[in-house]
Structures are given as C-alpha cells and as structure tokens.
Amino acid sequence: MERTRERPGERPGERPGERPGERPGERPGERPGERPGERPGERPGERPGEQVHVVVGAAGATGHRVVRELLSAGHLVRAVTRDGRSLPIRARDAGRLEQVAVDAADGVELARMCQGAHAVHLCAMPPLPSWRRDFPPMLDAALAAASRAGARLVFADDTWMYGKVEGPMTEATPYRPVSAHGVLRAWLADRLLAAAARGEVSVSIVRAGELYGPGVRSMIAGNVFGAAARGRRVHWLGDPDLPLTPTFVDDFARTLAVVGEQDLEAAGVWHVPHPAPTTGRQLVAEAFARSGHRLRLSRHGAGELAAVGTVWPLARAGADLVYQFEQPFVVDGSAAAARFGLVPTPYAAGVTATMTAFAHPLAPAPAPRTTQTLETLASRGVQL
Image 1 (cartoon, rainbow, N blue to C red):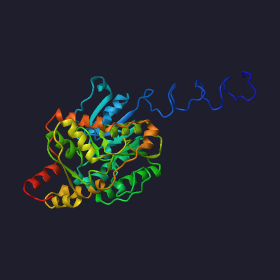
Image 2: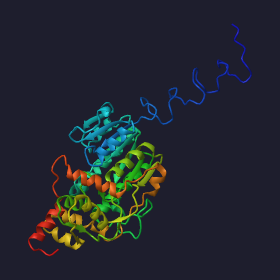
Image 3: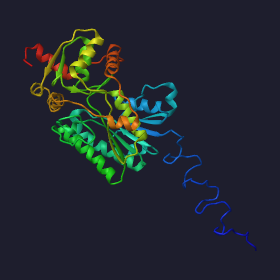
Image 4: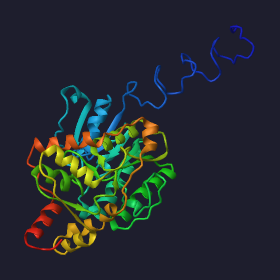
C-alpha cells in the first residue's frame, strides 16, 4: 500500500501542519492535560478568575471576614468551623459557599475538605491559655491537608515573635521573642517555612499588629472601644503616647484573601498595610469623640498587670505581652501594599465602624475581663 507522500522533516504518521510533540487536535502553545482556553495554574472545574478557597476557623472575627472577601471576589469557598454554624452572607453568594463542620486538628477530615483547593486559609485561633496544646496539631493538620491538595497554605499570624524592637517591624525583622507566646509563634512560623523549603507546600504568612474592629477581642479592642461606648475609664496597658499601628480587622482579612489569591512565592511573609502611626491616646480620643462621653484614661504597666495575675491567670499571661505597648509598636506593611495594591483603612473610618458596632450590637458585648478586673480592684481601693 502506498503511503501519502511525507514532507521533508515530517515524521511518519505526522499530519501536515502539526508541530513535533503535538497531539492530534492540540492547539499550539497548549500544555498536555490543559483544556482549550484554560490558563496555566487553573485547576480542573475552575472558571477563569474563579478559585476554590478553604477557610479554617471561618466563624472567628477574622475568618468570617476572609470568607466574605473571597466570595466578593467571585471564588468558591468552603467555610470550616467546629460546629458547621451558618455564616451571615448575601443571598447572591449562597451558591458559592459550602459550610462544613470539621475539627481543625482532624488531619484526615481536613484533607478531605481541602481537595481541589487553590488555597487553605488557617484563621483558627485557640484560646490564649491553650495555645501550646492546641496550635501545633492544628498547624500540622493544615500543613498536611494543603500539601496533599497541592494548595497554598495562608497563615493568619501576629508579630509576637519579633519581641522588643528599636524601629518599625518589617518582614526582615529578626525573631527575638521575649514571651512564651512569642516563642511559640516563632516556632510555628519556622515550621511553616521549613515545610516550604522542603518543597512540601507553598506558604504565605500574613502578620497583623494588635487587632481592633467589630467583634474583635484583643488587648486594646475592648479596653478602648468597650469603655468608650459605656462612658467608662480606659485602662491602657503600657504607654499611651508611643507610636502605634493597630490593625483594622477588615484590612487583615482583605490581606489574607488577596495573598491567597495572588501570592506566587514558595514561602512568602507579608505584613498587613497600615496608615501612618497613631498613638494610644489619639485612638482613645477618636473613640470617645464618636461616643460623646468624656474621656478618662489611666495607664498601667506590666508589673501592675502581673499583680492582677496573682488572682487571674489570664492577666498573668497578658503581662508578658504588655512590652509591645511600652515601646513603639509600628508594623510596616509597605511591601504588601506595593505588591498587591492594598490600601489600609484610615483610623477614623475604622474607629467609626467599631463604635457603630458597639452602639448597635447583634448581642450584648461584655466588657473584656482585663478591664473588668482592673475596675474591680480599683473600686476596692487597690492602688494601680
């Protein structure tokens, strides 16, 4: 049987116009296994611009905002909570949100939930006294799940590993923790970066300063905004006149979401962008201006909080962290702002949103226990 005449350079069986190595019907430039029109890096089942994101700890103050940011960007989201609770979302987003009940430390179930994910956002936050017990297994479960899924692991972190510093904290600031919680945070970060260095998973660590905003519990959130809403005295821990960059929780969530979408680093470390530094006193004044109450402020040092800790263990743990407010506490997030085009929320807007939430709460918000304890001792004549 006579074969069709082949052109010079063509291989036997190769059709005219095909390039060496191309399969029949394959378009020039397509990679093996890619669908026509599929962009490099997209996963099967994803539409252009759409990704699957898993948010672990989706019911928390940060986690539920990360869910909201990702849904607003048009992505598919699996919201992981311990009890599978329903999150408040817009009706138009309901079809792109899957809400599941999984223990964040259950590596088998978490791996199943992360199948097909582009990124896994670890936003779960154990209670402060149980960090040493609960954080390591939670981190290991997320690492294993993200690695198995081929997904990026995005970790919601703080700045406690830096310890006492002499200037603004950048991503290059060395770790010099001065508290047990700071040592643990440094260890968790090193564990993540080591896994990335071994090629097991891509990692993005996003660090925030002291958080504030609606629903936030932190060393300044309730002490400032809860007191301002009720017209009570603010008990400021540390020096209220030093430079400070508190992190609005919406900015933290937005940075976590955008980094999960766009970061291409094998091991990226990013700080949340902030406005220019303010001070604790200016932040308190802004809150009281919104509430209409007369400003009253007392300052307390680590030694005084340690004294409270003789009767309240959580205060004793918090005393280890007051050092942050006895030095300039400035987080430099300019690298993330430049890389991802992020713009921080002005303090006036963040304070207004926080005070509005206190004025119209979904449920009664108790004063933080630090404030309650200091007020109780002061009422009993204890010198603070």
